[in-house]
Length: 303
Image 1 (cartoon, helix red, strand yellow):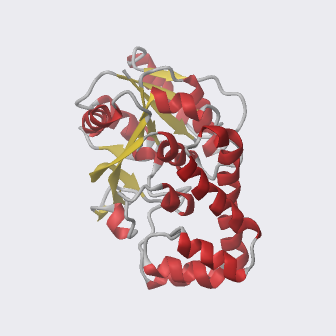
Image 2 (image 1 turned 90 degrees about the horizontal axis):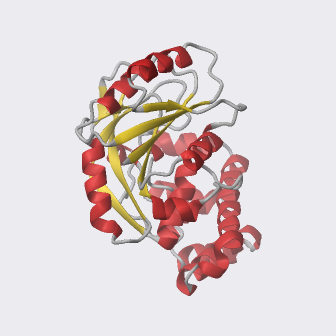
């Protein structure tokens, strides 16, 4: 059984298409668990109509308070008890064999260990017109590079493509406040304690619209200039958040992490409080770099 964790918020324009794409999957042993984050539109009404027809497949969790994306997924994660868990955004569309391909790959690699798989995704506009067949190529992401030193600096997986097993879920426990996003944190825990595999083909249509929390950005000179003009303070703040996330992982799991990986985490955490030259020495020595030359030039100039 797969639990599909679906977080919604003001999604009445998109939610029906997403639920339909899940209900018509070629792999049928799943249930959808939905947590709505206080929608002000017709999202709940639409969800309830689906529940009336598919009560065996769809559950809506009780609303408590507005949580935000990260905490909403944390709430969903704690509600799951299935052997396998997939994450879903409210505005995408799944390719019909997404679950089938994902669960097959996850079962191949897990071997009684914590495990995670994720895939590429195609970018589409609000009306499902194709923008890019491969989001990872558009964003110039080395999506199969999920070594710990790389993940500390840059997450390569979108949560909406991730599937994990229960062994990994049990290690994750609560996603802490210090986590940048649920998907980044989950990827890091999988890299430290388990196995990760990338499926090099798009399994979802990733919708781009004005309300995206995080969207696919084309990697080019315009992207680089936009990042540069965000300002140094914003970029430094974001990098420090990655360090705080890493420090929290050390606090929570330090005595459980093998020595080689713990050294990488400790060296990354040092970047919070070292001088100009030591900062760059650690970046180079431990290869704390992102995918793409432009990103790394910007990091060396602005941090």
